[in-house]
Length: 84
Image (cartoon, rainbow, N blue to C red; front, side, top):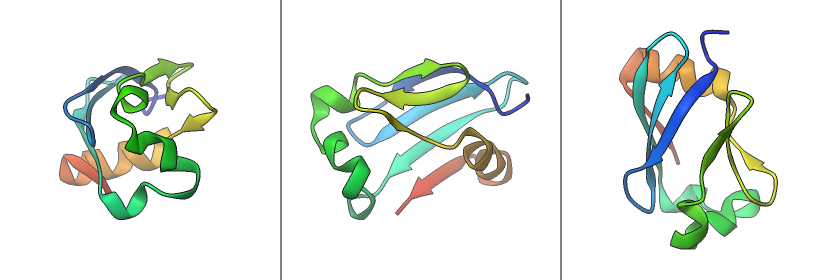
């Protein structure tokens, strides 16, 4: 699928650079208001930096992940997916 993520790198403690299988690249930015509930653990910089790609999906320890299809659509549209 085009929206399979092939690489992810943390740019800061709240922003990622991602690249998809079709070469599309962009950023994912977490606003502080989004870092609650299941994403609460990502407030800890050491955990945020443990980001990785598993089977085309951006993941962290603790079964935290991001929907690659929604991320792909927004990055194709705007170059950045802001989670607020």
